Structure formats: structure tokens, C-alpha cells
Amino acid sequence: MVGAGIAVVTLRNIIHSAVAMMVCFGSLAGMYALLGAPIVAAAQVLIYLGAISVLILFAIMLTQAGDANLLAPFHRQLPIAIVVALAIVGTVGWAVVQTDWGMAAEAVYAAVETIALTLLTDFALPFEIISLLLLAAIIGAIYLARRPEEDERAN
Image 1 (cartoon, rainbow, N blue to C red):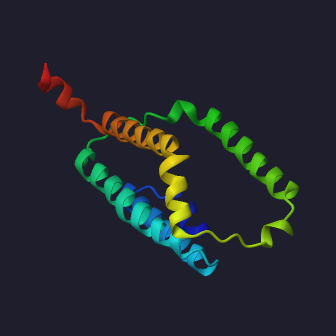
Image 2: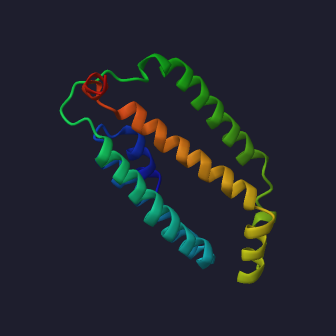
């Protein structure tokens, strides 16, 4: 899973990167299944591996610029990205060191009905916010991947 995650951000071909992301999602689903959480594993496969990955692949296929030599829109943001990445790595490292891993070994069991009721009542708003965030990401990807000649033809 870690290798596939690294491949997602380091591969130059965006299709290969998307396939590596699918491998990462599948590996995570396998880990959930091995940890005794088959409902979460099934949700991972259905939502992320099935729906999100296919949506991203369709967005790539429909908006890909082909052989056009387009400027990279993010080249000026590299220093900021490095600072943010180091901050995130530091925060995750601090959380790993501060966590009491002995308590994490206690298993918590919940019925399917309890999980469904909680997701559809208490956490309905976060799911709606995430859906809007995904919509904004797809619109942003389409905007960034558009061909410059399409703008000239529209005028």
C-alpha cells in the first residue's frame, strides 16, 4: 500500500498514477478485512475502488490534453508544497509518538444497524460536505486540464 501511495505522487503518467491509486485503495480494503472490519472493507471497495476511482479515470480520460505541451500550473507552488508536506509529516509523526497504542488493541464491535443509523443521522452533514468537496475537485480538474485552443474557439 505504501509503495502504491508513493507511486501515485511520483509517476509521470497520470493514467499509471490513477491505477496505482486503485492498487492503494485495494490494499487498504485488504488491510481492513484482515483487521476484522469487513463492513469498512466492503465500503472501501464499493465507494473508493469502485466509484471514486472510476470517476477519476473518466475525468482524466475526458479532459486529458493529449500531446499538447501545456505549462505545469503548479510549478510556482513547490516551496509552499514542501513546507505543507513537512508540516503534515511532522504532525502525523507527533500523533504516532503521542498515541497510547495499548488502548488501540481493544476491539469495538457495532452492529450494522448502529453504524447505518449513525452515518445517516449524526454524520449526514459531513458526508454532504465531502460530496461538495469532490464536486469542486472535479470541476477544478476540468478547469486545469482544458485545452487553450478550446477557449479560442469559444470566442
